[in-house]
Amino acid sequence: MEEKALNIIQWNCRSIKENVARRTELRILLQTRKPHICCISETWLSENIKTPNIKNYTRIFRKDRPDREGGGLMTLIRDDIKATHVQINTNQNSNIEAQAVEIHLTHNKVKLLHVYNPDSALNIDNLNHLIEQMGSKYILVGDLNGHHTLWDPNTIQNNQCGNALSEYLLDQPTIAHSSYRTRSCHTHK
Image (cartoon, rainbow, N blue to C red; front, side, top):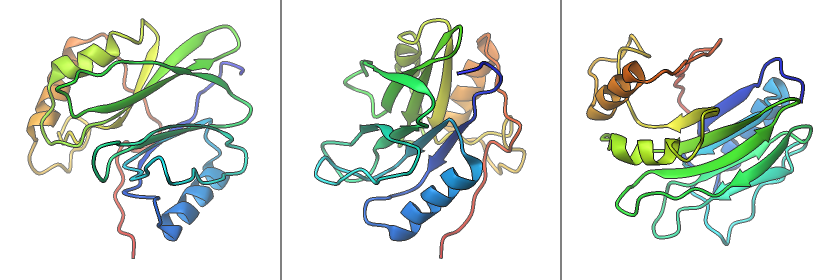
């Protein structure tokens, strides 16, 4: 892949399990935006549910929540992008769900860490445990359930997760870049 811009979408779909409207919305999103990578959280899929077929996205990495309803991650890689699954270990006492892939660029490789935190609290040590496995070149995406005015000025009240993330980001040599809004909300009818 030529190293100009890597276009990534992260979407909390709140179930594509048996939701025809959400699956249609996903297909439209991918057809109109054509991202290189689409990271979906809260798929609510289980191992007995088939992965949806999506044109131009045949490399799909899933991590289903094995022990209870909800959760789940799916990372879709556009067919012209080379990527491989990266094995990561999560702390056993952590509720964080995570998966990683390595993206092969023309002259470089970068790891993509896709995370879903189902709680409004976040143990930074658990997040650090995942990030430390990524090496020096990584992109972190996901739904961390962190609400903070640092990234959303319309937030009424910061939550514990938002406070923990903002402290973490301010202490790390990180760059948060997006040419789009980082948060958008809409209601499905």
